[in-house]
Length: 150
Image (cartoon, rainbow, N blue to C red):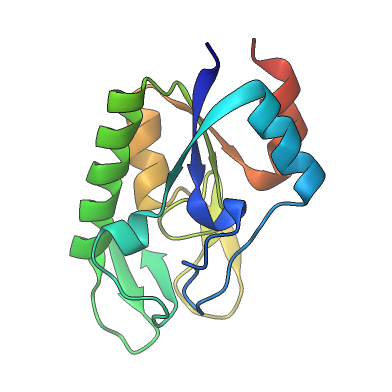
């Protein structure tokens, strides 16, 4: 039986990105992931109740605020809790998430100024998954994720 990999749905081509698009990985990468893992897609922002499309949001400390200045933290926290429930139910030990996202970013996120400035930090979901013991990768760490874990 293949190991379960929690993965951002936008990386699989699901149109759940804030602007209505996706961040689909190249087909050869998706094929390699499917060969190695049972993929478990999540979109914490959509699952937390936010529409698609939606205003872009960025993390500001413990809060998440959209470009209009509205606090959307509750939806992000709800989505993170649902992603964690899914990971636990499906037996995921690993997650491959969208980098720089206020929900999925791992290690580096946008700074909250909406100026494309990246700072050290985690998105709400990535933080929750790490605290629960999952190993979290960003999409540029694809090869490490695929070839380093057995």
